[in-house]
Image (tube, rainbow, N blue to C red; front, side, top):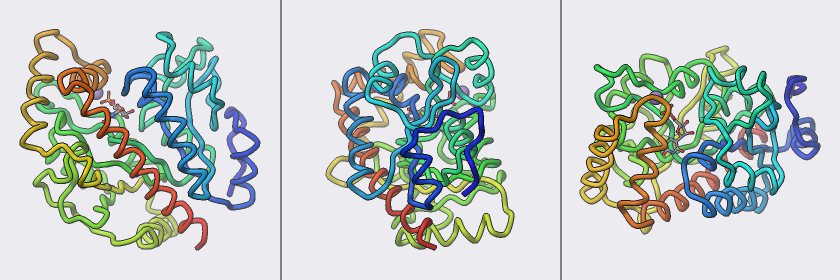
Length: 306
Ligand code: PSU
Ligand code: MN
C-alpha cells in the first residue's frame, strides 16, 4: 500500500493498519453533519466505528477539520461534526475552498472517496449515495458522487439509492460511466428504506469474496474507477415502498414549495422524511448503515487477504 498523501492527516492507527496490509474501512461525514439529527448522528457514527472494530477492521472516518483533510477521527471530532452548525457540506468542488479558509467540512460520498483513495483505502461504507435527481432533465441536478465513482478506485457499500432520486436514470448513468453495480444477494436494486426498487440490478454477487475478486480484477487490469456494492436493508427494518413513496412525494413537494435546490436539496429531503415519519425513517437509516458496515468489513477483509 502506498504512503498516504502528505496533505492528509492520517491517524497512527490507520497508518499502521495500511502499512501492514490490515483491513481499513472509510466512512463519510456528511451523513453525520447533514444526514441525521443530533444526537443520533454521533451515536450512529460511534456505533458504526465500534462495529467495524468488532469485525476486525480499522475504521477511518473522513472529514476536513480546520482546513486539514483528516483520515480517522476522535470522539470529540465526531461530536463537533454532529453538533456544530459551522460545518460545510463538502463535495469535490468544495475541498480546496474549505482547506484554504481553514474551515470545517463534512465530506460527501464523492469527497470521501477521493480522500480515501489518496490515503490508500479501497473500501468505503455509507448509507446511500447521491445520483440523478428526479426532474434532472430540467434542473441538471446529478450528484458529483456519480462522476467520482467513474474515476476513483474505491468500492462503496450502500443500501442502493433513495427514491428521492430517479433510480432508473441513476443506474443508466452508472452504466455509461463504466461503474460495476453489484447487488449483494439480490437481483433487484435496493431503494434505501425498501429492499426493492423494481429496477433490475446489473450484476449480482453472493459473498464478500466475489466482490473482492472483482475489485482485484478491475484494478489489476487498470480499469479506473469505483465499484458500487448495493446491499438491501434487512427485511425486519425496511419501510415498504408503498408506504415510503407517498412520504417521499410529500418531501419533494415541500422542497419545491420552499424553493430549495442545489446542495441543500439532499439534506432538506432527508430531514423532511425523518420529520414526516416521526423518526421511523431514522431507525431504518441507522439499521441499514450498520448492515452495510458489516458487509464492508467482510469485503475489506477479503480484499486484504488476496
Ligand atoms: N443520501 C442519503 N444519505 C446521505 C446522503 C445521500 O441517503 O447522507 C449524502 C451523502 O453524503 C451523499 C450526498 O454523498 O448526500 C449527496 O449530496 P448531493 O445530492 O448534493 O450530491
Ligand atoms: Mn445535487
